[in-house]
Image 1: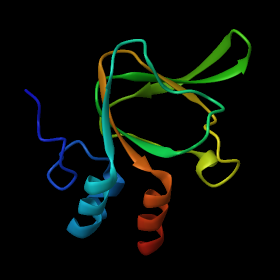
Image 2 (image 1 turned 120 degrees about the horizontal axis):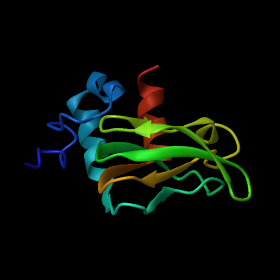
Image 3 (image 1 turned 180 degrees about the horizontal axis):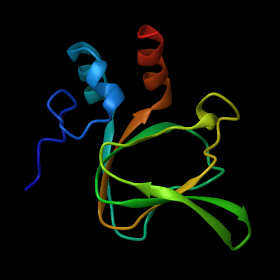
Image 4 (image 1 turned 45 degrees about the vertical axis):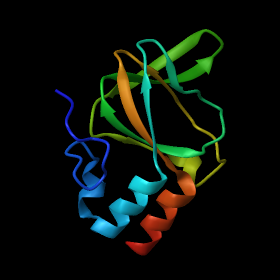
Amino acid sequence: MHEDINNCISCNRKAECFKYLSKEELQFFNETKTTITYKKGETIIKQGTEFTHVVSFNEGLAKLNIESEPGKNLLIGIIQPSEILGGPGMFGNNRYSFSVTALTESRICLINVATFKKIIRTNE
């Protein structure tokens, strides 16, 4: 039942913003991305860590939360396929401002933040 989500050009689960990119730009992402599968309960992003990658969510479900104080988490939302996770840390303090945990087995593509910014700049 796996659809072709390994190739950015033919992936039908790519984020809406990727649908406006050229084949060359999608190929650039395809050549530089890393695809990872997480098991239920695994941490995908930990709040406060260095912002190194934009996350393109392809399969599964995950929860997005903010850790307000030790032991206290505020659920912000549920992440589904075709969503992309960035945030203010990409342009600010270079840190993730949220945590993401897999609720089901989840497959994501990690796109280097410098690569992502390069493509954004060419499409301004």
